[in-house]
Image 1 (cartoon, rainbow, N blue to C red):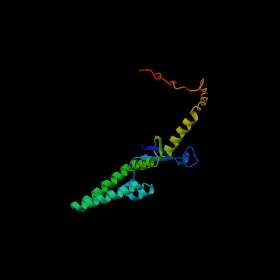
Image 2: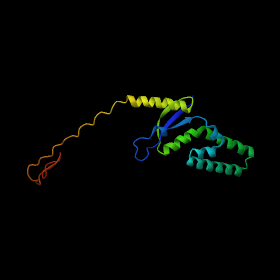
Image 3: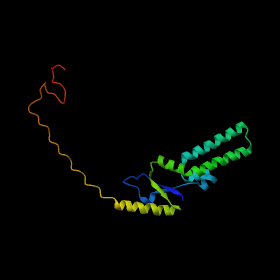
Image 4: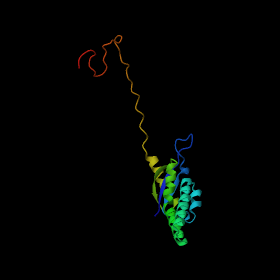
Length: 169
């Protein structure tokens, strides 16, 4: 069964917490469309740095293979391997981008599909919030008395554990 990670976006201005409708469930596993159409999948999910890295990697590998005189079969196999890596690591790349954007990971859910994952997560989330004990009242502010000074300060006043002024150590 697939595993989903649940991510909470940073709150919008004026909010203390993000709305649950904005939570994102990212499946762990192979992403077929990231394998087949990696650049479009990366752009569709707004993974800009990953897209730039993907393009630079393909350019560097293509240039390197051309430089060493690799055959077109080798270039095709290397391109297939890069596509496989993107397909298998698409979820991790997506989570990395969310973490960079300060999205908070709330937990993991094991479910057959995204809809079931949402049901399970929100069911447990609602139970946990309903069962949460009310926060204890804040302790009262401590009341400190002001120090009392008897008379004006003198040159012989000592604070703490220092020796008396003018005496030997």
